[in-house]
Length: 436
Image (cartoon, rainbow, N blue to C red; front, side, top):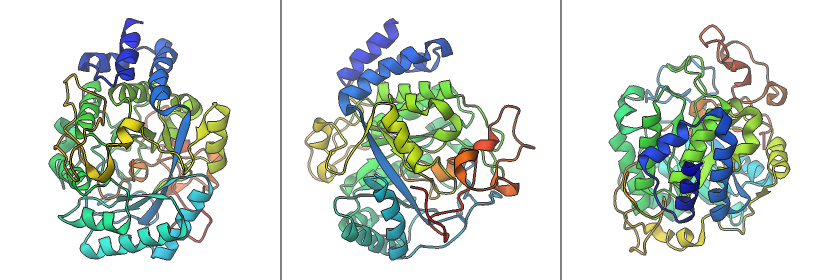
């Protein structure tokens, strides 16, 4: 297929595809999906080999968010039967993080629901970061706390944070359809604050909210212009009790095409399969490893993922290997240039530039503002797994699915896999051992 040959050549050169080419990837047929995966896999292997980075979520504060993001189980007015609790203490969060690190994770993502942190909240999280780093040499820590005020990103970096997550989620044109309590521009501002403070930016999207192909391409091109080091791709899980409870729009093949499009547009960036992979990719999860080089291990924020051991077995059986703590995730040209927040203007949407996240040797803290934004305070670090409901198989979840704990069949369309959705009932905020 000429399209795929062209996209592989561009990906190996870190050259931006045209919008028409990106849309054409999403329009390919199910019959061609293996060809699409094979082509995007060449680009993935060029920049990341067969390594898979493992990330582990710790939900520091769950539920009771004042924002109205339609996809989120923690939103204002949500009737989803999720865990609700206030701030974990630093030692509690450190113990939760240790479970994921013992399972092979190299990055811990600290997430708290809410519009954004107060200065007292930043102090709490700073104490937690220090506790985790004191007890785990070489661990990466990403914070995900919502919209940042002036000076807060600098305080997090001083405390030892390596990265900050705030997802764009959807296109600017449709953003107001999913959230009214903050704006797309608010998200842009927070990611720019993280960049300027010298934090590695993590910003991604949610697919499956009823958006058009053009919206998916718009958000990925905006992400490329924003120039994050990692792009999490979430697949909506329609929790009952949220406005998007009936949006069951994804198939495994559709998810693979979306991941391939992201890889072609952002060839040398950490692409992470985040919330919803178990629910929507299902038995095709191993194929997605040929496209993405990063996943979350175990459970998400408010939902359960497949067993941590199953994640590790899947990686090995698919011929990949877990990235260890001593390895640098990003390709050399990005890793060398991404220190201390030095980001040069990346190629904008629709321009023929270098690869997603290509950095020039700019001064400390310099970053040209580009497109994307951040994630709603209740979403996940590098993802919105909790917001999107992350999901688990009935045979591995270890909990009963009844009542508010599952997406209700009375609201879901025929064919919806509500049986794969389970609210998290273990790990942080509970007395039960975490899934790692």
